[in-house]
Image (cartoon, rainbow, N blue to C red; front, side, top):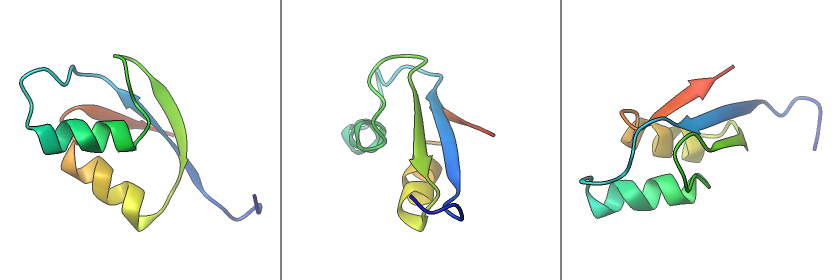
Length: 62
């Protein structure tokens, strides 16, 4: 990984129960399974799109 690759931490802060199936798929695509799971992901437009879709379920940490 190059030094100029930005990374962001994403935490699942709300349960995916009673959410649309597409939103559950987005959470899984981010690599989040259980409540309070944290993943460090490369900052890319694809990842940002997934985060924006489920912004009410996840928190982005510095």
